[in-house]
Image (cartoon, rainbow, N blue to C red; front, top):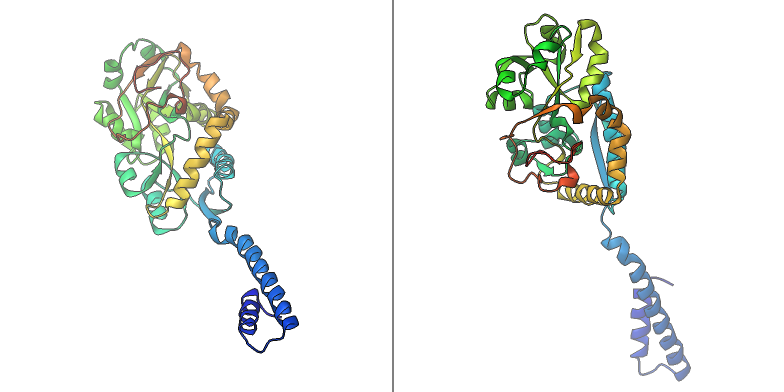
Length: 327
């Protein structure tokens, strides 16, 4: 018979005719009512589809490296990202984009070029100006809880350290383009840089540097990887500064940013975020025995003013009280 609109047009036209008999008029009147009702139903059912937000297609970097530390971090993100999107209120698809290990700068460029849609990066003021950050620390700031890899003959030297000044006088190692290199240099540390972690471990084994600061969730995995290099995790100290990995998206991808924000807030409120974090990192944190270490706090001038340090529920802390800004 045609669409409801065409039936309504036909019935309305016929009802305007002066020559339509009474029985025909009743017939077309009934037809008009039925078509109007059908149009209302179809319009109502179509409205949600018309108003529904489109499915988010989310591409993310999939690091092909077999390095244990990178692999563990990727496994955590692979568990976290769908959990976040499941609680975002949006439908979505996920697509891994295979890549080799890249620097933070290259990672940012890949986001800006649209090579993938979301990545997780150590934040700083410049990065937050170039990209759109979702300001919830994905690792609860534990990246800024630093233990020291040292030569296995040097523990007595570090046991004698009771403040930052003597530690700053010793030679720290860092990658030349790593965020902590800029931070340590800005805080007056004696710093030796190199191209990558392997070369820094070799420098430590040869005593060309005195220590290599690594996060709590990196130090013991790297110790297991490089134990034959005569290194160990220093037993008495932890250098602590506020630091965060965020999800970042391109500046024009507000829809994905909103979905990630909504999902993260939902799983923080439900406790699912904390449960996942502990599932992946409880053992490393316990092994670090942080409550027994001397905590040496640093400021982090690389963080933006928008860093949510006041939201203590977002940040890892093993202790009942910490200096302001280091929760």
